[in-house]
Image (cartoon, rainbow, N blue to C red; front, top):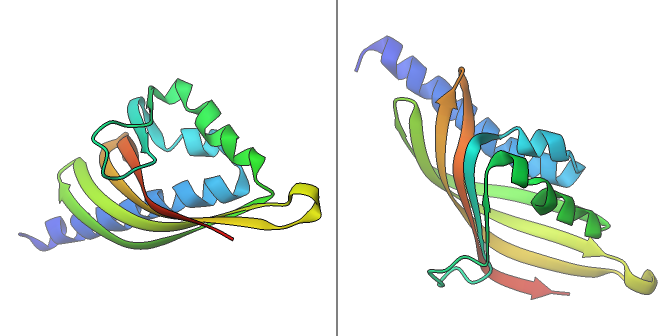
Length: 148
């Protein structure tokens, strides 16, 4: 691998991590349009409330259909997502990866704080389009949920 190829791969890996982190930042700031812009037009977004299930709980096809998914976060008083480790495989303008996340969701019904914490793994396929990395497919798999 040439030095130029190594630099390009490093730049791509940084850009992909920024994409992953932008997803959680948009969630926590309720930037729905920013959230949607992180996906390809023909994206496939799947949610699995049981990570062991082969069947998704929810499937959304196409970037234009993502609004309700991200608008659903407005039910929470506050959220905070922490991204952990990621594994990435970059192959030219395509990449796959798994990212670990801990998601905190706060509600305050009747003035009482309730906190739901979820352990999540994201299984991603990303593509580089127009010089930017986007999610072509994102599978959100809930590993566990704790309620406090």
